[in-house]
Image 1 (spheres, helix red, strand yellow):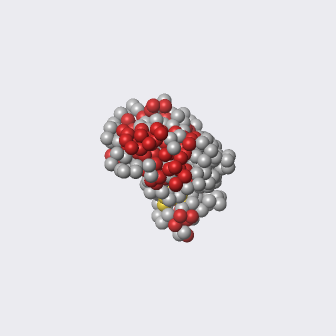
Image 2 (cartoon, one colour):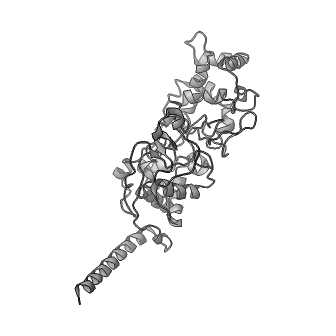
Image 3 (cartoon, helix red, strand yellow):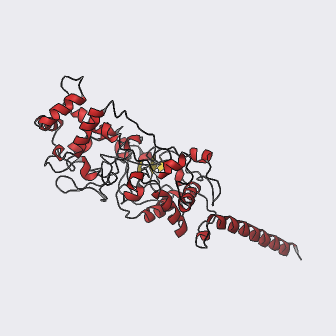
Length: 389
């Protein structure tokens, strides 16, 4: 046999051995043949975290105030995109590895007993449509407490029925985000809560003074503000509305079965959800969606690897920096199975499509396969609040 023939034989044998080894590993992860087809050892791209948040968790007015929101695998403005966390199905779901990426929700982030009067006032304000110009729009209208903090609308209608350009994210767990709104222009939930009230598209109140005057005309609020801000001579200030609503929103934590899993209950997730978690990590999703709320802790560009068409310049409208064009806060994925539609503009209707688009635009993976989408979707379902299951 000449040298060329010998080399061809070596290459064929090497390819056959690699294929057999891959098939064996894939079969262990996937009992059926369908699942054994989806990972071809592609490199993963993407690094960072993403999430957003507004007035309660969905879209609000001109720019949509939401607390938390759809699904964006955006990339940090400034960072490279690396290679995810690995290829294929490698890596075990051991406790040490999981702690590299995730933390369970804390039991509480506000002393509810000490702040009982403040939280009571905040909840009343959150639910009260009288904070709007026509007495019809409350925070809860777009960020429903009975619907995972959203209204499941692409963008939310304001007091005249007009809609803004951004999706209202969820208020659930929003207080744990790095900032509020899709563009991060509000530092915290207290600041964020005040925006929609004066927004001409959303709640439409003409001024801070008009809001305070309206509340002072409601006897019940005089007593509630006095109790909540007992050390202040004149507690009915516009700023204190945000302080109270923010205190209430800090109680909106939604522990899930995934938190139980992180705390050591290995039976908290089923096999499909565990497969999905493994793929979520290995494919590189975890580079943006990590931490306590699985996102919400960084800003990323949408369309990091493959350009994403959007006229919304995101954080650029706040900072004026070229590097912030099409950069948004990475959304939290908690309760994501319940908070459709997705992305900053609410243009993506299904979670399956959101997973596929994020894989393409953020990670550069055109074909992730049905089994990959199915398992990652199953894992994301484990992030739904236990109280709703």
